[in-house]
Image 1 (cartoon, one colour):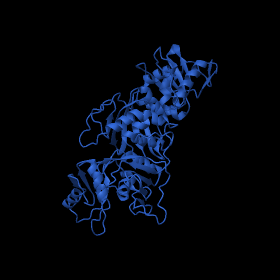
Image 2: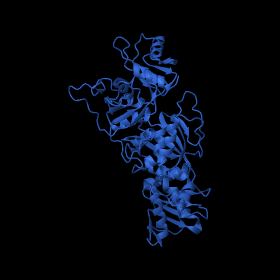
Image 3: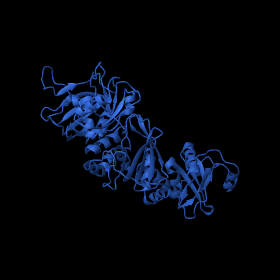
Image 4: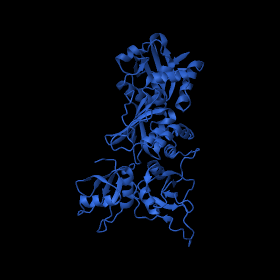
Length: 490
């Protein structure tokens, strides 16, 4: 029923032990347990690419597995030289075969059916129960995620939204290692981890940046102590936030656990550029996406404090996450405003970071608007200064392509980063300035050159207020203070 192109006399394994075969997309697998099924053997290759054929030699406890490309086979062999593969808890051995391909008789319907079932899983279908069992036998439920080209920050909630398309995300821990943002993410089932890795490895979260690099972790269970913006155990909402970490708003938490699958489920493909970000942000704002992928750069902000809010205060706060072009406070509904960012990426970013934050004592809601632009009032029409055009503002943070400001975008935090501080300004001057903004300064630290400093307010809300009031504050001699959120604590 099977024929190899190339001579085979059954002594493949003996020959290979003596001299290693050159790389080939056909792999020779030895020491399989007696009861191993074809599906379980296929599952060994599944995380590395398409499996195109299989031949099992039952009596010899051996199999040949053909991968779609030689690259996939090389990646697989390299991986399994460091991590011994197991089938049914028995270690198995993998090496290149002398065969360059497996020629099959199409009459072997069962093998073809199994391969079809597996490729359905790879293209996002639902796996049959025997494929699920095989997947579960080969991997950990914990993925290690590294994000390359991180021009926009990726939050824990964005990861939860993207990965929950593949199953129940139970725990996430984020951290920075070797100056790279990394995460460990635990599914309830190893099958889901397999599928997520297959679909998402190498994909970009946002247009042409934030590339996911995904591997299986050696850990099989994560131990999460705190629920905050660095770590989360979705199975234990009662965990404390830990020191100085913002805890998650319980209504948002409920929305995440409830909406995540349905929201991402509406988006075709795992990660259309921006769609995952749109879904993440929309879940935070509890907005049904209905298939729209966030092409608009316009945001609708509601539940504003209408006594206090001004176009300028919205320009300053939203300007932390992008270049605000126009702001319009709605004439008939002054607790709501439209904010036009430079592009859809910036709108996503501002939405995912500012939705649910407190501004002037009220929790604001930020969602994507249906409007494509914010209209200016017709000439000669006075709208009480509710609409402002900032297209030519000198205060845009992201005008220069590749500006290092892109790498310093962080969620609202109690600690602020100050820069452009004049040489003669003291710590006391800055403490007084920030106390007068209506908050309590908890800690302060100058950087070595004294042009920059960190200042810690007692709450995130106070820090937001201080940033709105004091970013671009004239410190004398035409030197304007620059204020940003910091990822550091003092």
